[in-house]
Length: 288
Image (cartoon, rainbow, N blue to C red; front, side, top):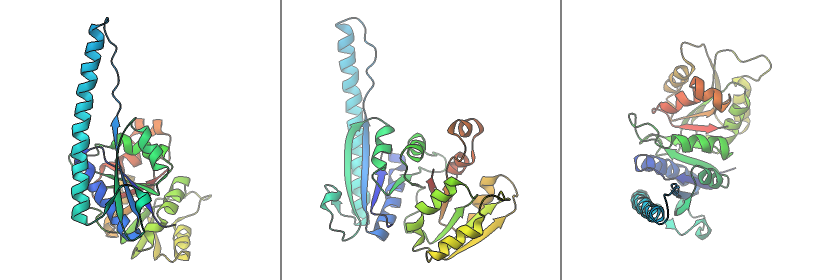
């Protein structure tokens, strides 16, 4: 199934451009619509003092918060307008005004609750595109990304600045035979269509009761994808081995299942997914 609707959450100026450009790269290839969504977090009302002093304090506090939220929303809308203008992507009132002529975009700015409203919106999109700020700034949207992965049921694309500004040509798929890996493989099918090469990489032994990378690569070849299986002997940390495999393959995207363990365990132990999110060299397509 082709990608026709891309949700691009726009919550932080530091990561907005990278996320929007990644969305544009996919939208151009698939003639898709970019639904850029900004959520103005509803302010929490603090416990007030005695009437009427408490009421006055609350009103002033809420007014200040709303003013700050409005300024930030306007700033992000300016970034959206600039990126779309530079890319030559028409901005419409909504996806309902499309004629399927090519990539299009629309902007939504609404009051809501983070991260719930982004995950809810993602459920009616084909893919979610987030940006990464830079090596030193990391992911300002980290909490939103994790919630989107767990709660949306949709694949999540994450790219650092300048790392995904065209359709991926060389893709590495992290394969361990598990459910999350299978979901990531299926979610990435539209992206494999234009790939010059796909490497299905397993690091270390695969349990005997699970299918190895050869079978996953075979499935892709049945879909007309140029895919090969690669088995690597562990040389260090799993994330370092996967990055090394992507470097050797000259990949411009890594596809992988996310959080195969419980979220609690990932939080306590760090987790492979979290460590992969910290690297900035390769864009990621994650599915849970």
